[in-house]
Image (tube, rainbow, N blue to C red; front, side, top):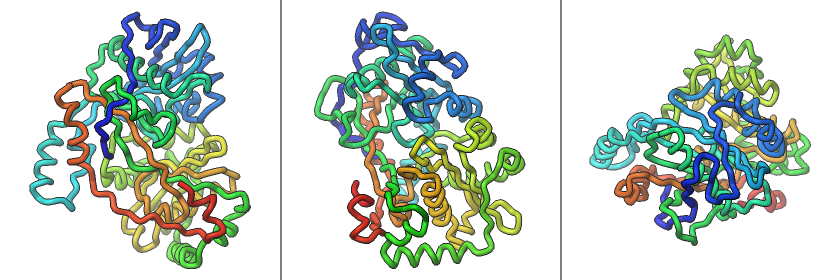
Amino acid sequence: MTCISEICPLYSSSKQGKSSVANPSHELNIYTSVNQLPFAWERLSQQTSIFLQKDYLQALERAAPASYQFFYLVFHYENKVIGIALAHYFPFAGAKGIRVDDSKAIWRQQVQRILLKQLNWNFLVIGNSTLTGEQGVYFSSAISPQAQLDLLFSAGEQIQRDYQLSVDVTVSKDWYVDSAYDCQTSVRSGFHKCVIQPNMILPIQPNWYNFEQYLSDMRSKYRVRIKRAFKKRKGIEQRCLGLEEIKQQEATIYRLYGNIATAADLNVAELPAHYFYSLKEQLGEKFQVLGYFDRGQLIGFCTTLQDHQILEAHFLGLEESYNSSHQLYLNMLLDIVQLGIAQGSSEITFSRTAMEIKSSIGAVPHDMFGYIKHHNPLVHHFVPALFRFFESEMKWIQRRPFKDSAMENSQMN
């Protein structure tokens, strides 16, 4: 993550009470449970992502990371609902959530560890802190992106006042670079713009009626690599897990998930063991858990969420030894591609991290950013420097696996 020192115009304060945001004509209602949400939320959410619909929100609320508080924001203009959004409030311990980069100099690692012990901040995240992308916010198209940001950050201030929260850091994430939300040229408020790792997205081409068509569009060396990976998985059984089997395998699934979560450079929150069961129970066929077994023993899993025409690759876990011996992670990515094509998806969102291997199967990077403000002015001044100090060096090569004839659509960023 890289913070840019330019300031963006996000927040316009209002002191007119709980139902006022940035403009006397706008009103805000704040709810703390899915069960409280009005019908207007349900009606508006049907026009947008599954991640703002009640089934998903109930699953997330029932299996939230520890110490999470949920806020559901409903924006009104002249008595009409114009927008809805999520907000999450939670404590973050730097020593637990940020991995020290052991490739750096010893002195730097030691200083990082000292600083991380002091980095215990309460975060208010406007958006969905458990996902990559813009799924946590939806407004009517009549509301300009600039006005949306004003409303969201005024809402953040109102949450703090009304619920007497001790907020150290307010964050809004994730927005796509060069989108209408990228407002770095204006100055009115003290939010830093922070560039974060890109979202890796594979656009499904119209001629990919099946996985063989996808392979046929690839250059020879990438096709050979994929076939080699398929050979290496010999002896590994893959199958979709139903609700009862997810429950039976819950402890193993949680351990495998932990293998990946604890190795991540940044782990904002640890999911509880029943998270995957909760999503399957609420979402049914829209949520898939692919299990990988060696002689009956679960050695890996990956999950997907079907969001209308978009297939979202979600959390996964695996035994690291099988990654080298059976190329398990690459096989998981390829199975998700097969699933997306079979389901007629328009694109597959692979999220951030492991960009190079994801690009080797055709995913392309879409740069993202967020806005961040520390409420201590002195600390806030040093936020960009802190991010640079803790940032792991991100060296990767974007692979371009498709033939020239297929590259125009598939390789555009």
